[in-house]
Amino acid sequence: MQLGVDSFASAIPDPATGRNPTPEEHLQELLEEIELADRVGLDVFGIGEHHRAEFLDSAQAVILAAAAARTKRIRLTSAVTVLSAADPVRVFEEFATLDLISHGRAEIVAGRGSFVESYPLFGYRLEDYDDLFVEKLDLLLAIRSNREVHWSGKHRPPLTGQGVFPRPVQDPLPIWVGVGGTPTSFARAGTLGLPLMVAIIGGPPARFRPLVDLYREAGRRAGHAPEELAVGLHMIGFLGETNERAADDFLPGLAYTVNEIGKERGWSPTTRARLEAERGPDGAYLVGDADTVAAKILAVNAALGGVTRITFQMGVSSVAHATMMRSIEILGTQVAPKVRKRLAPGAKPRPPTRRS
Image (cartoon, rainbow, N blue to C red; front, side, top):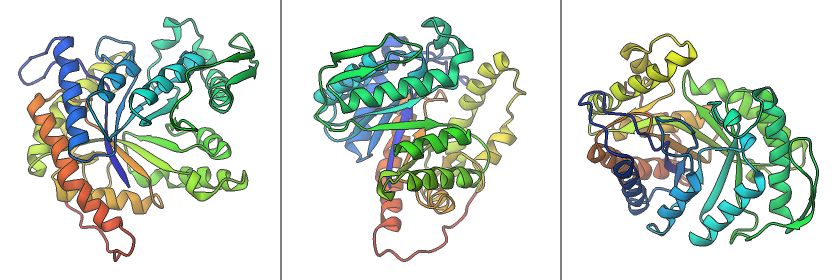
């Protein structure tokens, strides 16, 4: 199993101290975090895409390219690219260039996004939310397969044999499909034979098993080999020296972020008790010490029939830079070895220990 970190390049103040570094400081700290993730042996680092004041990731490929120049091994991916509101030609060009800079470490996770600001910003109608994604994913895959592209659709002028350059090191450039909880999205990814990245941000992860099974069955029916049908999970997570320390460091900032954004969406306020429940054995959060989080990863892996990748969304909470660095270090040096050992070929299966 691959383990890594996702970030939205948060620019939200620390709710405990009110401190809010400048955008320059935030981005420098983020690059240091990616460097550390590479050094401690994590497999992947992802940068999201938003177009609002709370986050600094509107130009995710630029951040990833800066990280590529400062890292050696870690894979660099979007988390996600809001493909519905983007030009697939430009997306491919940017990530192919990132692939060249990184010597073949770039990936795209293509999705529709959970925020809607990008649609009016780039001149699209929210009513076309799904249709835009289906059409643009089709174009992105056509570009990946062909240097000169012949393609037509409703939402973009046709391509009549134009070349799209540069071409990446990896052939094909990895493209995952980011999904929430819509069955059609799971089935579509399976039919296309594309790896799946599931955003699990609340509730028991086991509830996604029927959807993951749907994805695998759709892929099987379409003739795709099982190894093509990778399943990744994007989950909120954070590590500390103890369970209590991890929660104390992470949950206040998470509650602040969720509640501030929730005001505009009409959500009821998130309480500490609700957050504590989510980090329990059956909740969606991977928040705790190394033993607790490793055990929960193994439980989630078993519940979903085996997963290929789990990325920890740590950046939705504002914590001190040193605290974030320590969390990444624990993930790479303590959690990852425990999980890899238990999942290694020939390892004897055993029920993971459950701790709150």
